[in-house]
Image (cartoon, rainbow over all chains, first blue to last red; front, top):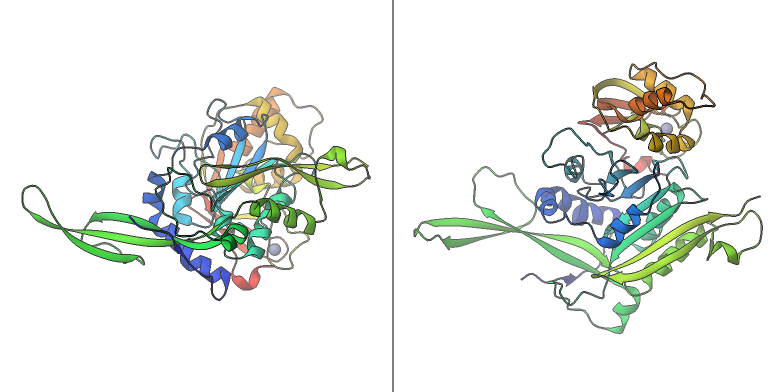
Length: 295
Length: 123
Ligand SMILES: [Zn+2]
């Protein structure tokens, strides 16, 4: 089994992400996608709760598994997927279809989650699932949250954010070598291995992962070479409360009040309310609702 | 895919390009028509987010002139169906979108628009 290893982000966080996140996802896209097909219940519930005609953004959509939801009311809302990995988007286009038929092609956009490609406030909702933890600095993670806030309606926009937690599920196969006070306050930068095994075929494109070649004997006694490639993805594992703090910082910098609409009586104020925040299966999540007082 | 619904939401984000950066202009497009399930409620509710003039222009650029130039006050079923077609059934597969202000070109290939910028273009 491969363990998670602590790392330290050196040099420019953007080139660090290019190397340790974007390149990796482009390489492992197909294999990664084959293991990510089950929507998490809270996210499915969130998408089910949205009214007909709402349009939203899935920022860091990956293989697009949330784009076809809600299952019980297909085509009642429209979620547009954005991702940095072109190879994952090719898969996301056909999310929810049995084959690559042309029946339900998803809307996907090749872009950066820190990019500002949308008319401001144009979406009704935005989700960011397992994405912000791939950004390699506090400033960049904060900007990612601000982009989500900016792209949804200031009056009724709803946002759901999931990130990976220091606090891991007991059932998680991943082993975590970290356990000190520091980490539990500030989070931890780590590498998480992605292992792909396949038979050795000659004409494979050159890969960037570490390659291990091992001999294995098949039952007939024939000897084949098996190649195992290990790719290391960068993650920032969030500490308890860290996501909430990040959302607070992001919102305050945009001049927004934090709390429920009822708590603020001044006119012309704008704010976000944290409607739920919790831990689920090795992740922290937070759901936000935007509000604006009428003139 | 770039359908006209998505086009209506995108704006140029090159550093310093903050006015007249919407709507992007389609160029050299190849389109494919694909039927989508008609949900009148969806289309009706969507209307408040749309920029009508931008939609009519974009539709013309991809060869559809079925929409009236001014947004009608009343939406009947016939118009909702036209809107449904324009917004959800025309897929731009190849081509580009150009910013009316800074002329930046966002290429579209295999139905996927490339909104990434080079480092020096990011604001
Ligand atoms: Zn521009």
